[in-house]
Amino acid sequence: MADMLTKRATDYAQWYNDLVLKADLAEHSDVRGCMVIKPHGYAIWEKMQRALDDMFKETGHTNAYFPLFIPKSYLAKEASHVEGFAKECAVVTHYRLKSDPEHGVVVDPEAKLEEELIVRPTSETIIWNTYRGWIKSYRDLPLLINQWANVVRWEMRTRLFLRTAEFLWQEGHTAHATQAEAIEETERMLEVYRRFAEEWLAIPVIKGIKTASERFAGAEETYCIEALMQDGKALQAGTSHFLGQNFAKAFDVLFTNKENRQEHVWATSWGVSTRLMGALIMTHSDDQGLVLPPKLAPVQVAVVPIAKNNEQLEAIRAYVQPTLTALRSKGISVKFDDDDTKKPGWKFAEYEFKGYPVRIAIGPRDMENGTVEVARRDTLEKQVMQITDIADKIEHLLQAIQDNLFQKALAMREAGTRAVDTYEEFKVEIEKGGFLLAHWDGTAETEARVKEETKATIRCLPLDGDNAPGHCMVTGKPSARRVIFARAY
Image (cartoon, rainbow, N blue to C red; front, top):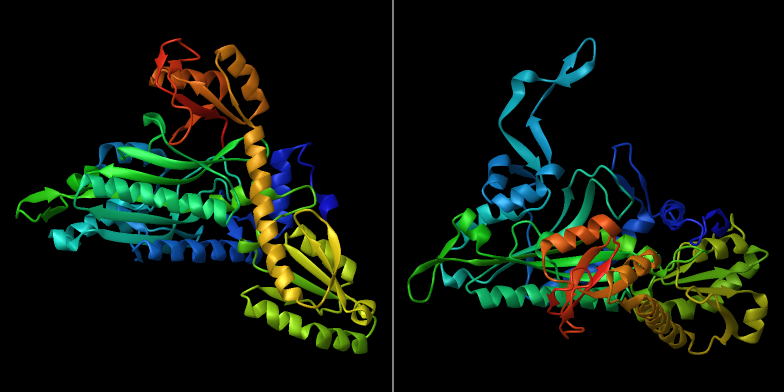
């Protein structure tokens, strides 16, 4: 199957698209800009969901669900929010169809809604309208809610997982009694995202703050994690927003504090989406196909018997059964592939292409020698191992693969991160891709000029990094610190 892939070096965008389609992760829908997530892709997303959901609940959050439809007037209540999303909104104007002899079915003109409904682009407005009824006293705070949902943002140019008109995500929405508590929550959830990206996806990320022009619409501050893909482009992997009291004031969400005075609550929102699937693919995969970190692989170990007849197959099954039981008892997902309609070679190619972290092959000679052949997907190395304590060996191997993928991605990012001091140097280096650390004078005008002239944006002001002052590479004006520029998805 790998020979059907466009090579990364030839056309990275086409390689990515080929891989998503041919590895059975997703496909284009007949609905323009939307995708069908196939079972193999959705199984990876389910593991992401499960891990993140556990992390949210460990930090005190609970799940709820809010309507898909948002009255248009709700968006109008927060000016910067509606301005930020106005061009991406899908609008419902009617509530009924009717039969038509000529056209089959048409919109019933008499079924026009009194107020148009917006298909959820994000849920701040409807959630804060709801919170007004939930929050009365400081005893109701903090309110820590997460929602797993789909959203619609009408995109003209789409790419599977990375940018689609409809996508899946989670969105957290919290309310707090003080500004300090809300900021603490914003930073806490950013750290949850960092941990998930690095410990589960094996993707190193940089935590930072967005510039005003890149800030979430309606937020006072947007924190983010930024990752670098193999082609040298950046990808925003998650955001956490300090909303201040903007939405509380827009929707009149007040609480009585301990001094018996009323004040507006302080808010946050935060989210990651199926865009993480794109990040996972582009960070680790290669010209042989998909590469998955063991923690997120739907099947971590594929066991392929090599048998000429049913008698040999049953002997191999009995031989490997204790190993399968031992692996499963360790929480390792394993598949014993006894499908006799496909050759072992086809299975090897299939599991390699779809990114299964470990493949075990067992034939009659292995049974004689008390061995198995173990292949690891990340390095494509094969090794003959004694079957004694094989479950322990596989457990350690899976962790080694997880660690190796992270270290490989970290080395790639470090190699692609450079400091530049002049705009002329910047224009040369940005063509090579990667993260460029450069001084910026803090103005929106300079930021816009760089974007227009080079297609590079300020990805973030890193929370950790070079804080030494300098001079803007473009204007020469004083600069408080270096920021990260890159071209991005």
